[in-house]
Each structure stands twice: as C-alpha cells, then as structure tokens.
Length: 76
View (tube, rainbow, N blue to C red):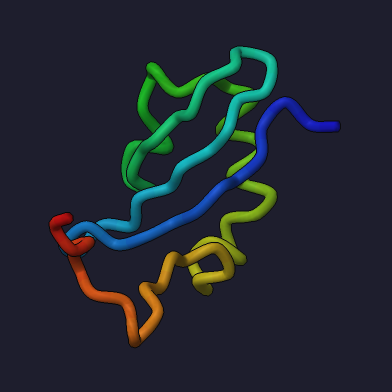
C-alpha cells in the first residue's frame, strides 16, 4: 500500500484544494495544486500527485454537496 492516498478535492475560489492522507505520518495533508512545486512539499508526495494529476484536474475526487443537503446543518 502506498504511503499516500487522496481523500478528496474541492475548489476554494479559483484554486483546487487537495486533501491527502499520509498513512505513515498518520496525518492529513491539505494543499492547493499550485503549492505542488513548493520546497516544503515532500518529494514522495509530489511524485504521487504527479501520477494522478490528470485525474485530479478532471475532478475524479471532487467533493460535490448533494442537491438536497443544506449548506449548514440545522441548529438543534
């Protein structure tokens, strides 16, 4: 099994946000696609994202709110 696994993607304004689970580090990593070339980004994570970049950009993991779901949960 790979160290990383993509959980979901979504848009925040004009930027695509990616959430990845790091199983070895037991953490969630959230970043925008334009941060992919950052020096802080782990090389192994960059390589993983590059292998699925086309699917990411085509929206394979995009989160879409169900039509009948309200934006905010009701207050109880």
